[in-house]
Length: 74
Image 1 (tube, rainbow, N blue to C red):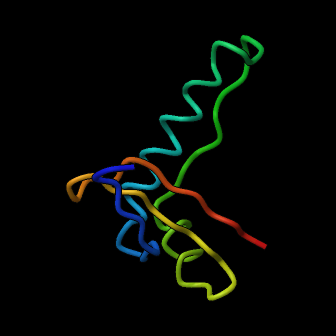
Image 2 (image 1 turned 90 degrees about the vertical axis):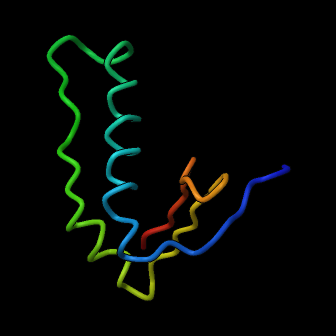
C-alpha cells in the first residue's frame, strides 16, 4: 500500500484512537436495536492501556495522519 506507514501506538495517540473508536461505534447504530447506545470511549483509559507492556497496538498513517489502528488487549 503506497503511502501507508505503520508504527507502534504511543500514549499520546489515545485521543485520536478514541475518536476513531467512537466513530466506529456510531456506525453500529443502523444495525443495533433502537434503544442501544454506544459505550463511552475515554481517551484516558486508552492512554493507560497503551502504557501496559502486554497491550499491542499499531496505527496506520498516511502523510502523518492516522487512518486506522488495531489493538490486542489481554
